[in-house]
Amino acid sequence: MLAITDYPAFAVAIIVFLAIPGPGNLAILSSTAQGGVRGGLVSTLGIIAGDQILLWGAVAGIAALLKAYPAAFAAVQWAGAAYLAWLGLRLFLAKPGQGAVLKLKPHHFWRQSFLITLLNPKAIVFYMAFFPLFINPSHQPGLATYAVMALTIAALTLAYGLIATVLAQRLAERVRASARLSGALTKLAGTLLIGFGLKLALSK
Image (tube, rainbow, N blue to C red):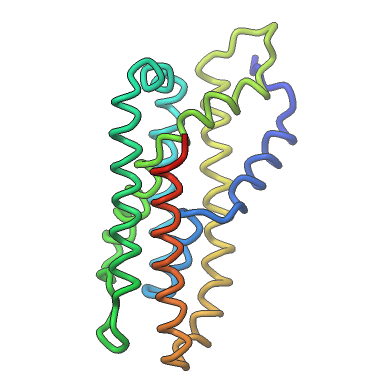
């Protein structure tokens, strides 16, 4: 028997969480702008892969380990911040007409999104705090309960990524027609990534 108390509320909460602007959303939009629908979908799969590792890591109690050893938490935090800032700086310094800063091969989109997701230790703590809200305390949650939650998150992320990719592709077609607008959006994307990196580094 599953120990989820309110599955619909759990699903709605995940959708709201997905819609919050962040590095993952930016990765999907950027990948779609450079690699089309295929790039956006591959980026989404990278996010799902990284998210599942963090999710099951939280279930296994990695969050407790990170809290017990602040140095380990800080190391992962700084690694994630540095990676985001590095990507953002490359985008911001890109010159008009020089081509995409990131390579357009699908496996690069996957790796970029995977690392952006995986190198965010806050996500592990989030899952550790989030899951108990939908677990019935009178029932010991087994593997099946967490598996259903994990599959739900993966499915909703895939659906969200598909919708975001289709919408981003339509926008990208208009952006490509204007070199000035394209350059401005590239610098904006770089600025946002640097900002996400700084926020992650300075957050406590």
